[in-house]
Length: 275
Image (cartoon, rainbow, N blue to C red; front, side, top):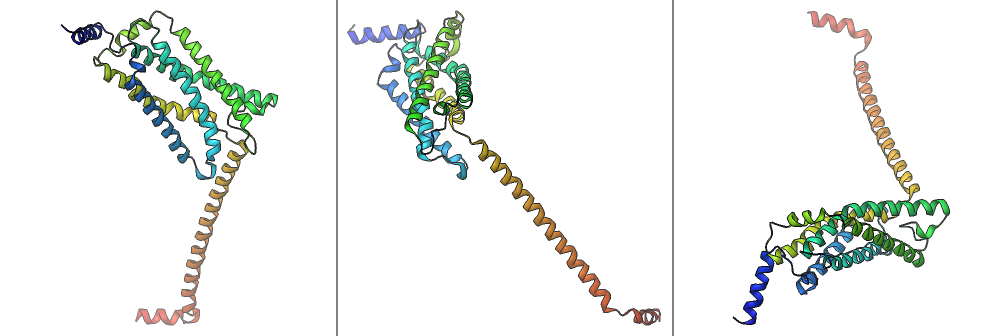
């Protein structure tokens, strides 16, 4: 038996034992290809979100880049940390990566929301405009963007430390045993873990997080609501005017018919009809 056959037999035994993904599967050529493809798809989702914004409130490309680049750096930091941590656990690294990713997308999103709202509260309370996420001054200041990037990456560090500590609980071993148990092909498992499942979850997570990060002017929201209410009032007034016009025209037609018949000729008309 040659060395190739021995290697294939050893790989088959390893997969049979439940270790579907190789320890280096997340960082080999196929793994990196899936990761780059996922990053491109997620970036495309954020571009599409910009075009879904109302035209009058659509962000400029510079503001959009400032908002989304924070997410990009934070997501890259979390992703690289998950790839490294997946290889530190005993067992299938794909399964550990998926568990970390799902926790980042649920428990981590809650931590991000609390952190962003806390920074915005401090910005309004203390006057620290540089940490007010989504607001960069007029004209946009790159220093405010850098400060918010550092804050957002710091939130990602808090998320990753919290989830790593949460992952130390014993019951995750049982979760690991069945979460991807129906899949016995390492390539398909890697595609599910690195591309298919993260694509749909990232699309939702990036969309929601972008709403947290983008600036919303309270005065603009009030102005928009006033414009809508004024427009509605104008429509109601226009409908009432048209209704009054139609009523006046119908009254004019009726009065015109009455003028055709002279009141003095009414008895003569009635006598003619009776004959």
